[in-house]
Length: 307
Image (spheres, rainbow, N blue to C red):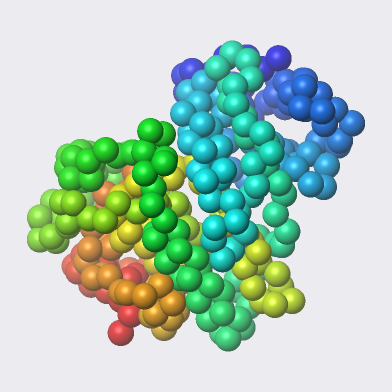
């Protein structure tokens, strides 16, 4: 059985410890009729995720993140067969014990895109970002109303305002230098963001780390990790795209946006970068370095420009 996990301290004690996790995973697999399948934990991810044989993946959510498990099960069930790129098919999801939730899903084919990116030639990259743009266009065109009971925010403008109030302190906790912190409020005040944008289903973390590909194609073979999905402004999904898919390459972002069907103001995308729930500007600056004295408007153009 899995111990109850409700606090950060319990999470740090239980979730990384396979001597605590493995008996519960084996018990749950037996209940799901998969007791004979080999079990192997994936090293990546914030939640504990296991390969169950060759065909299944089991993702677990402790009580502290139970709502994320319910949301992912619902979103994946809603999306199955609707996108140009495959998403995991839900085989079962629901509560386990002590507040844990689980999602049992199909295992996608292909290799992780992030470690392969450096060796993919330019024409292959162009093909992959085109498929990413086409996939986002379909995702954002779907009516998210059937998911409104499990996904937020209810009011986009209220979400943006809450994030405005907390973003400087969040970046300070991540170790952002004071010189950068001082620029954030003025920059955010200078960028108009829509109060009531189209309500689209958002992945929120479209990045190479959540994409699979066929190296022989190249083509995308999977998009996964929908636990942080939201309903809101489509531009919000282009934060991860610009930082971790096209990675500051204006030609690739232009191609992706052409496939998507529209472009976005770089300043708006940097504003959403700062306001993103998981925003970590020091990390982004290590991935895509910028001069220490660069105005934020120049950072926006460097990361999200298409010229």
